[in-house]
Length: 102
Image 1 (spheres, rainbow, N blue to C red):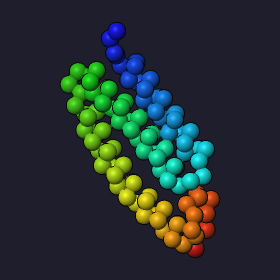
Image 2: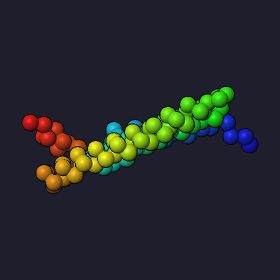
Image 3: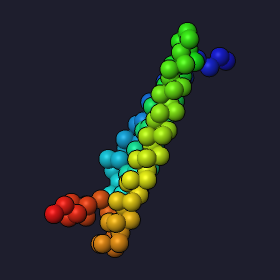
Image 4: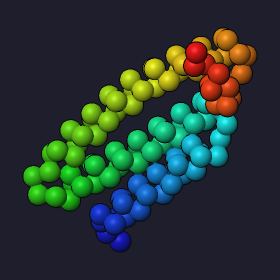
């Protein structure tokens, strides 16, 4: 069996759907962050798959590297927010984040 572009796109779509489900159904802020990271990794799978199956398509790999850097920065900022939320309120539920605004 030959693995082609539709197989990679299917894996990317399933990963994105699982990440979206995690973001929409969880109350825990850490679980929401994990869902966002899963969606970003699904985008990376699609970028790399398109760069593999398009003639001279190095742009997809560059975009995937950019998304990895973006995800690292997002994780650092989001975890700082989660730590502040836990320090101030003793919980990491996303519902309490509404009370952080002044």
